[in-house]
Length: 69
Image 1 (cartoon, one colour):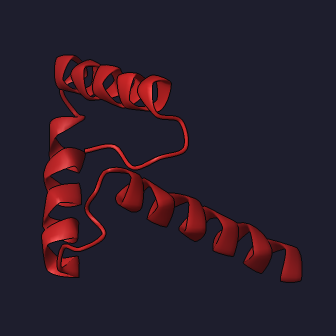
Image 2 (cartoon, helix red, strand yellow):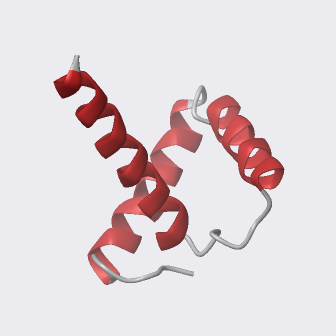
């Protein structure tokens, strides 16, 4: 049980780090959720998913540990 809670906490921290890395940490939570819902719809299209993956890959390659804007 404790291991599952630890994994869950780690996953939430990792996802929160992505919000910060994208420069969105100052946005209201409703805006973030709305954006994530839009992304969830967009990634159903393979071309859109690949385009977003390329943007993310580029952001990680350019700045692996700092904020990406």
